[in-house]
Length: 112
Image (cartoon, rainbow, N blue to C red; front, side, top):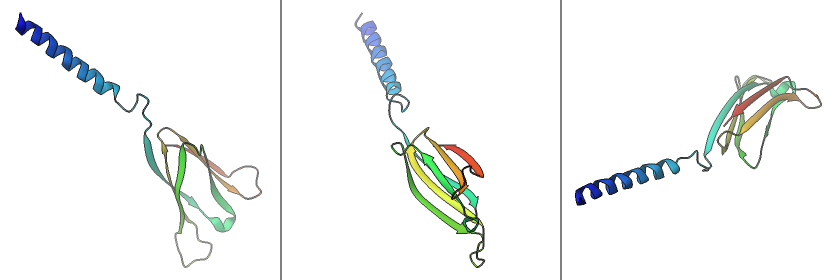
C-alpha cells in the first residue's frame, strides 16, 4: 500500500513540475525583447530619406547609419542601416520620402 501511495505521489509531483514549467514559458505574459537590423538602399543626395514610424513605448531605435557604395563619389547611393530593439511582435514602418512630399516613394513594414 505504501509503495502504491509513493508511486501516485511521485507521479503527482512530476505532473506538477511539468505543468509549472509550461506555465513559465515566455508566451504566458512575459515580455520578450528582440533586436532587428534592417538594411535599405537609399540615396540621400536626391533628397529622399528613410523615416521610421513605430510605437516608442515598445520599440527603440538603437542606431542609424549610412554607408555610401563609393565614398569617393559625391552623391553616391548606399545602404541605410537601422538597428531596433523592442517588444517582440512590434511593427516598424519605414517610408522612403522626400521632404515636402505628401506620399512616400516606398513603404516597407517589419515585425520585431
